[in-house]
Amino acid sequence: MLAGTMADYILLAIVLAGIIASWFAIHASIGGGVPTAYIYHDSVLVATYPLPGDDRVIHFDADGEIGTSEIIIDRSGARIARSPCPTQHCVLSGAHRHIGDMIACVPNHILVSIRGAGEMHNTFDAVAE
Amino acid sequence: MSDSAYSIPRPSLADLETKTRWLTLLMLAIGLHVFEAVLPSLGPWFKPGLANLVTLLAMVMIGPRAAFSLAIGRVVIGGFFIGTLFTPTFIISLSAGLVSALVMVLAWQRLPGISLIGVSLLGALAHMLAQFWVVETLFIHQPAIYYMLPPLLLLSTVTGWINGALARYIVARLTHE
Image 1 (cartoon, rainbow over the protein chains, first blue to last red):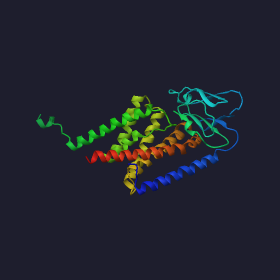
Image 2: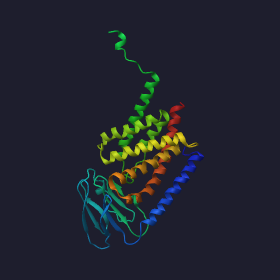
Image 3: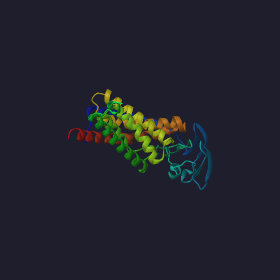
Image 4: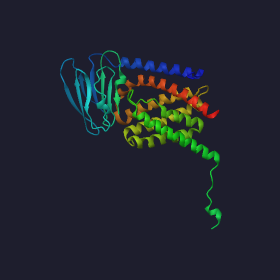
């Protein structure tokens, strides 16, 4: 039932090659160093914080399109603790600390991107609404 | 006034059958659209694409125009039910649904040797790419969101292939019995 035509398999091979190549390219461009939270409002980088390895807790209020998103960065990672958006998916997604992780609040135009050293893993944790 | 002034032209049986088939597919697509909205999320903007499968069925069984109107209809009416009408989610869904329908129609008409599986695969990838482009262009304005794209495209490849196989099976059952 799942068998395709020769053209389908050629298409699949091209698609998979493209995805794998782009994955490696992105992995290479993410950079090295300590995992760091980059906080954006639209195209503007409003703050960067290395994820702490100790008990420090950083609070940051990011002003967005519809209000202020409260971002907390601590040992467990970066998370949006409070958001003015209606469905709160960004809040419910919890903390993220792996390189490549992202939290996007589309209605408020806020993006928290974790970048730094190591592999780009766990990107499925990223939650947007 | 003569009797003919009051007479309403009756549609042909074939026309009624086509409209009934389109409405049935629309109802199915709306139901699946709502169902997918309440499913646990595998990732941002990722859905299994079951509602898009119905667009594929409309394209094959009725025609390209039916596929486009069904893609618009299910997002608009589905938006009423799940409360996302005219929100960013609605704009993202509508744009991605239309781009996906366009890519599927072009692939179906122009790519030789491709089956519904390949058409569905291209539609799923187009849907995901369109979502990211709309989010980056209209809302987030930050190319960093594309870092999330490769794993989600991989998932779309899997679901696109499976949905295409399902569509092929359904079309075969509906048209040869």
